[in-house]
Image (cartoon, rainbow, N blue to C red):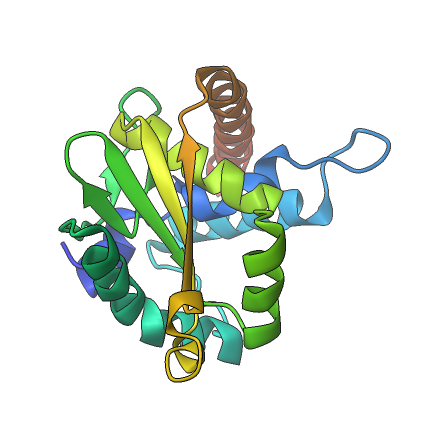
Length: 206
């Protein structure tokens, strides 16, 4: 199953996915769910009611990332002499209606998560090596779904190749954190239970 195909969209319809875990986990200063929590909840409810995915706006930055993802993976494979196996949607082994779509599988234990940010963001990452918390959550849930032990986070920008080829890509390996995964899994289960409750209310009202 290739990502961003009709089959892929159908497989993840109405389900919690790794790229949205931060919307479930993050809280306000008062410890309450954020507006993104509510928005994501109603998105999944709507998808289940309609049987169709809710179309989302693709920003120029998102389009850029999608267009250069293959080049980033090729550069990674060349740099580490490691084949990357592309994959589609992988269901969570124990949580129904949840799953992940890693950018690729590496060997028997690894994953790859690729980001192709704007030049300034890439330069900042080259210097700091700091990964956004939402990306850490995304990768940990991917490891929860796949059973993998690590994920290589890749930041890539092709414009660096001509003048500074060694700076076009930076890779940081993130190990599996079972304690964090347990926390994420519990939050996802509670989120899905809330969706089920509201689905029952809507179904009875029909």
